[in-house]
Image (cartoon, rainbow, N blue to C red; front, side, top):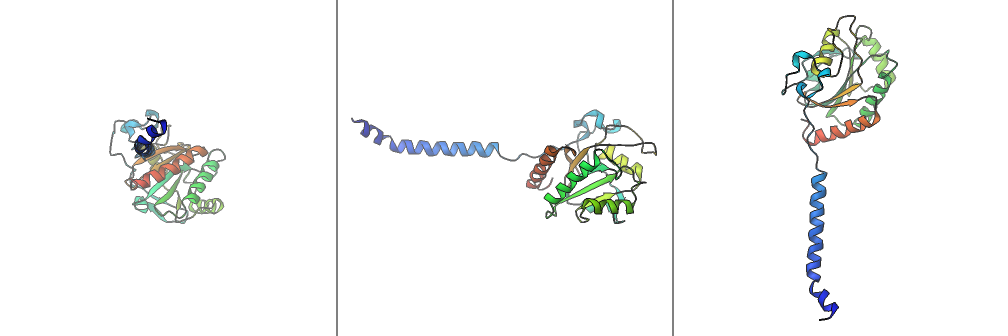
Length: 226
């Protein structure tokens, strides 16, 4: 038997084997690149220093508490404003000259990236609500390019805002009671799903974290937003 005759006999097998290899490679690639659901962050799962002692035992069903605050247009903003929305939350103050300008620029970046996406909104809480009145927030919003329909800057009762930061968003390391001497300062951005659950923590001063946040928003949307 000649060498040519030998190879002709295995031609069909070679074609079949090549196709099989391509199919296997395709399956492996799709498996490795398949989107996985984001984790749900309950207090028990988060570093203790970020969680108020009273809720450290909570292992499931943690959600953002109801709230009622006022935005840059003097409108009342509640949890219903964000019903069936994915949103990014943070804490800032208008006179901050350190991390807040960077965070606000990154929030603006997120706004622009998702400007046509009605499924996603932004929510920035002032941690100096007495100073950051509605007119002050309005001026700041205009300076920073805030789109009202997309992004709310809110002021209101300080104790409520501080309790939200500490017991709902799990965003702050320091302890306090929200009195006039209390002050929080955090770089954390929080990704909240349509069920008001925390789905991610991000450093709002780091560009790479913003890219990760945008990717996680797409992942969350892939799974219906919750």
